[in-house]
Image (tube, rainbow, N blue to C red; front, side, top):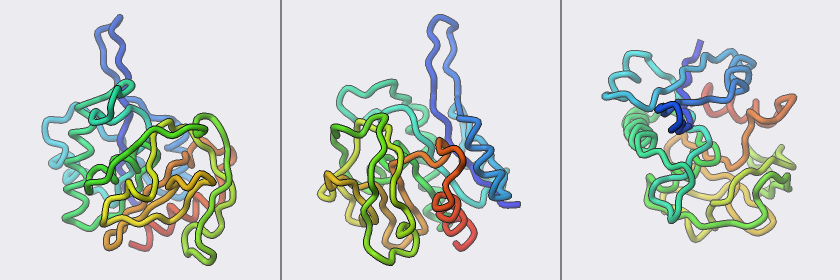
Amino acid sequence: MMRIAITQRVADLPDRGERRDCLDQRWALLLEALSMEVIAVPNGLRDPLAWAETWQIDGLILSGGNDLLSLTDPVNPAPERDHTETLLLEWAETRRLPVLGVCRGMQMINQYFGGTLRRLEGHVAVRHELICAPGDPIFANFEEVNSYHGRGLMPDDLAPLLRSRSRAADDSVEALSHRELPWIGIMWHPEREQPFHKADLQLLEQLFREN
């Protein structure tokens, strides 16, 4: 069974003196539907790379939640998460492992390669059409997706090593891929669809089993 590591959002509970790692339970159900094992990544590890090697990870998902610390006026930033994800991306890059970035995760991939982000209007708690090139081998079957982000990127914000694979009506980038590595970023949340969408399941199958 493939082992897919997935990063977690950080929830700060000052009244309890705790910073908790959190992961939507639907991620486990989604990967279970694909006969993949989910391994949640702790954000407080001293050595995330040694942890990843011990678990013999086959692929990596960067999940949503927490603004990146580099943003202006970030909401609920988590420096320890930014640090952990950066190290794991470096590790996955050297091993050419498949990576999926979801919402914040796609933003993280773009930032990792030198891209930028901006505020977007009309993308929080809505659904919208997905526009992609006809015949795209991964995204041609997508029609409508959910949307929960206030930050995102336009084509000019893309890092040079990345390319846009789909967009929203306002031309903001909704999906991207690396030009050489098996890395994909999407701005919607496949785990929040009930039942899970066939196109999302196919995307994960193609990314993790064919690379």
